[in-house]
Length: 80
Image 1 (cartoon, rainbow, N blue to C red):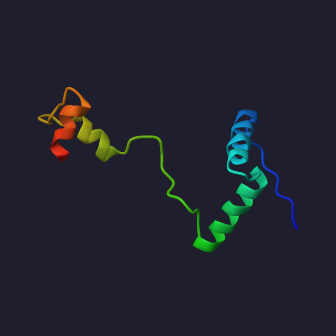
Image 2: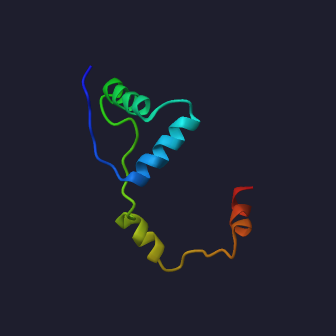
């Protein structure tokens, strides 16, 4: 067995420990599972995304002539 060390904020560690404890595993178990899935899938096992809006989204938000809705109920009528 090898040892892997990483630095994370105290808050992140506390939140992760609590989450994994609720799931019945340790943070070490979760990290081991993550690394195993990386190997099995040949990369990171989830899509990496930026929190920033991409240019297509920014342009769509700034587009003139779009439709506005007063609330979610009004918008949801389109899906019925």
